[in-house]
View (spheres, rainbow, N blue to C red):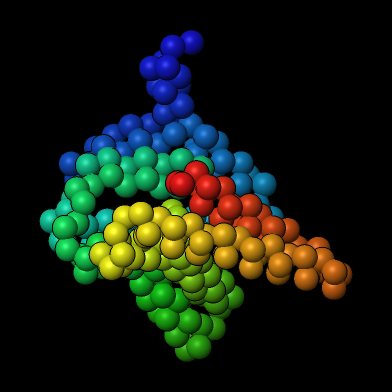
Length: 209
């Protein structure tokens, strides 16, 4: 099978949204369907909603600053947004932080709604947004915190040293998650989440070097 045919097969849907080409890959669609079908906690749908609103925050900042995206690709590993590079550091940082800020705003809104009217759904959605916002602020390649760190380090020390700083930060986060996973395991808590995060951080860091 040729490469072009394989790429078409991987793309389940392609359409235009405000001038940007949106590509929804087949693995992404399959993953969403699988998680929604097998979910027994009721948290899958609010989780995907929080992620979608996170990315909407990025897109809103891009459009507000006249850096409208040209392509949006949804894959299981990430949401890839292609847009003209922001020449100013504060614009790049604002675009990167707009996603987590959206999650924290939702956390505050639904947290307040829970305090006023109650409802487990409000509390769950508030906590999910807080976790997604905090996770994306970690200084790891591919996350918003990594984008901010790379932008600041590049302006201060140059591209080469910025890569080394980001590499060290990614390894540190991976080591920290690994230590947390081992600590929990030794104390009888069998939670694979820290180990999965450690593997993700390590792969993301090594792939960008």
